[in-house]
Image (cartoon, rainbow, N blue to C red):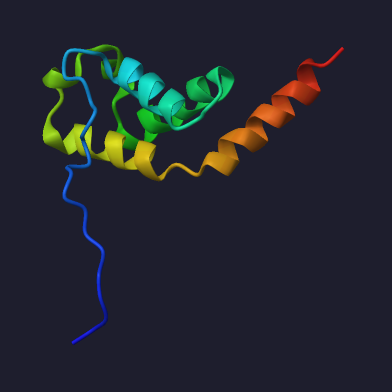
Amino acid sequence: MGGPSVRTVAPISLGIDPEATGYENIAVRAAVMGYWPRAIASLAEEIREFSELGDHIHMPVRAYSSGIQEPMVVKLTHYPRSRSLARLERSRLVCSP
């Protein structure tokens, strides 16, 4: 038998508000994870594309099938924070006077 394993006891969708839109859930969860506002919009767009939400990102999460909700939450949970920070730094360079 292999070594010890780590398992979560909380569902991956913990903290997702079913009454809020996909975008609102992404924004709140990303802010809690330390993302900057500029990076949140980029993150939301990547999640929208990855999960194939399309314009449904602006609908309440309760309207999503589990097949759509799960990729949204997985992508948000595993999105590399350093990637969003790198984008933010690039945007600061571009926006700097």
